[in-house]
Every structure is written in structure tokens, then in C-alpha cells.
Length: 299
Image (cartoon, rainbow, N blue to C red; front, side, top):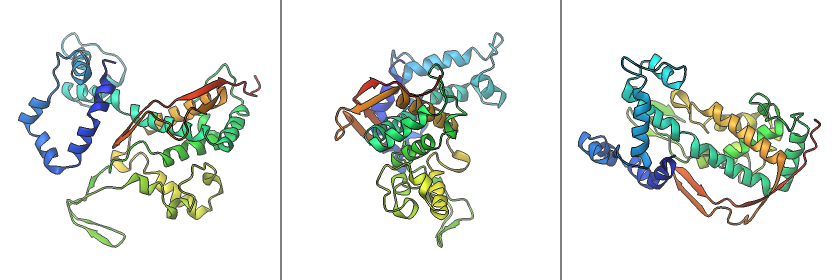
């Protein structure tokens, strides 16, 4: 829509660079710099165009002739957000979860279809699920399928949606981590690729895409795996609010695609035409051959 996501993807390298250097963060918060960097509302595409459209839509919900409708904007109003805050939140809603969820979906599907053992077992479970071909699997049904659920968790582990540090600031009283003192005001973060791919949590085969690990791990290891998995969407008060929606999308999309089609990767050694990481991944051109299959589901 108005090349909004495309524009943001092009700006990701700069955004990632600026967000990693404290001086530039301070500079970008200066009112003069913000005015200079602000996209034009007269733009025909990109962030400026979307900002103008969102501003008009949100503006209709305020004033004497305001429109009242039970939706997310009305929820924001009820919770005390200002018109400007709602406009900013509206823009975020359009972008949040799009590239992150699609990254896990693309990568997860690639690892599934290039692993015959995994794909065959998942298709068998989908076929035996009892979901008619005339229906789409429900949000409640997806997590009840053990192997599908394991594939979703393994996809989130093996190729997390982002690699940002998700920084947090230590409180005024300081804190301790594994016996080390962290002074007040210290900025800390974690490396997702290390947390989700390490021997201590996932065992010596952590570098393999193996959904079965979520079944055959002993209780102690499973507890460590689950503890690490809790960080996929962040943690605490700033944990991703879209986690439930993302998991629903992943369960539904993987289930329906795998049970209805047989996929073959065009180039398993170079699956993407474009693959870049700027805190959030930019992926384009995952080429596959798709052949419709006849599931063994009983109508």
C-alpha cells in the first residue's frame, strides 16, 4: 500500500545503524533534526503518504462530527491516547508483525520442505487432523496438533524473526546477573542467535532443524528450552503484544500449505534472491515448485 513496507525496508540499514549508536539516538530526538527528517505529507508514496492517510482517518474520530466505531482506534481513544499518539500508533500497526512473521513463515517452510522426514510426518498429522478440506484450520485447533506445534516452535527457534538486542535499562538500584553486578542505568540486551542456538539449552544438535527435540528432551533440558523460547517475542512489560496473532498465523499458514501442496525448493543452496539482516530481515525471491496434493483427510 503506497509502497509503505518497501520504503521502510530500504531504510532499514540506516535505521539499524542509527539505533545502535547513542549519539545518533540523541541527535534524532532533537526537535530541529526531527523536523528536517520528517517525511512530507504531500508525498505520493512511502511513509509520508501513509502518515497523511492515517492522519485523515484518525481525524474523523475527533471533533463535533466524530465517527464512533468499535475498533482499535476507539479502543485507543477509550484508553486515553491523544489524536497524535493514535496516528503514530496506527502507522506502527501497519508495519508491526509483517516482516517479522513472514520471515519465520518463509524460513520455516523452507526448512520443512527441504527435510523430507519432517515434511512427511507433518503432512501425515495434517491429513489425520480431521479438518475438512472445505474449511481452514481454526485458531484453537492448530496448537493441539503436537508435530505442527513443534514445527512452529522450531521455526521460531531456528530462524528468529529479528536479531536486535531488545535493550533494557537497569533500574536505579542496580541488579545482579549470574553473580555480576550491573550498575544503575546500564543498557543490556541479548543475542537471539546465541540464545536459541546453543548446546546448553538445545543440546549438541542445536544447529539442526529438528522439531522432535520438543518431544524427546528430558524434563530438565525441556525446561531450559522453554525458558529460552520465552524470549522469542521479548520478555516482561515490553513483550510483543502480537505474539498470539503471530502464532495463530504461523499455525494456520503452515498447516494449510503443507497439507494442500507438495513443495520443492528451486535452489536449496541459495534459496533467496535477496537475504539481508538489519535487525529485521529483508527476504525476497524464495522460489519453489508447488504441486497440488490430495490429502488423505476424511470429509
